[in-house]
Image 1: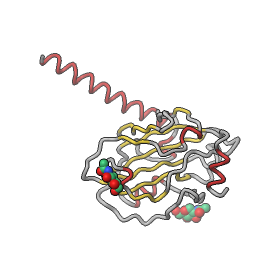
Image 2: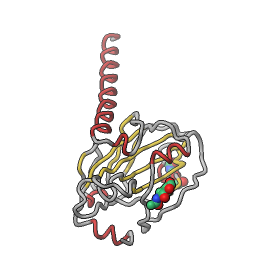
Image 3: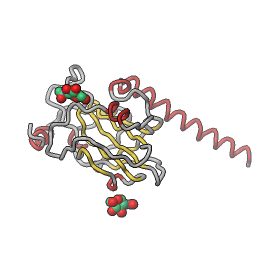
Length: 203
Ligand SMILES: *[C@@H]1O[C@H](CO)[C@@H](O)[C@H](O)[C@H]1NC(C)=O
Ligand SMILES: *[C@@H]1O[C@H](CO)[C@@H](O)[C@H](O)[C@H]1NC(C)=O
């Protein structure tokens, strides 16, 4: 019985370290670190879209599959507050990211895992990479806040396209958010759903 327990613990340990190795490799190989965040998150954030698509450390998804707000899962302390970011460092393109980062979603003061109980600073908008701009990286980062905070940041509605010049790293430092506890990312390129999103954003 005791032997069985040790084997189980070993398997859990190996599974956890593998998960951690995967995120370290994916964030480095795809330069999410350093382009978005200087510190690689501790764990993989679970992100699942209503379309059935799951975000898997750099997999390619189509803009049409990420139009709706995804379901986000993570282990949380119910008494802590969290900051969730979705950002595109490749605006307008990865080759020439003059408007890095373009902020797709920013929710702060999230109580535990209840994202809808958080304060929305930037309303969710799915991927809308311009035609011919290649693959963009869409990066999710989750921080555990040092407490409930007052955020002094410009708000963006879902029709507001002026979301460039965002910096995950600046936000992290400004509010002392520390080490990201979880992260994940996917990649996407133009598809025929993008023009409607651009129209919504006033482009
Ligand atoms: C999440 O927050 C919303 C808005 O404050 C609230 O209506 C809802 O009951 C909360 N859900 C849970 C599971 O606590
Ligand atoms: C971007 O923000 C920085 C300050 O964070 C500012 O110095 C710079 O002028 C801004 N650039 C644009 C294009 O708005």
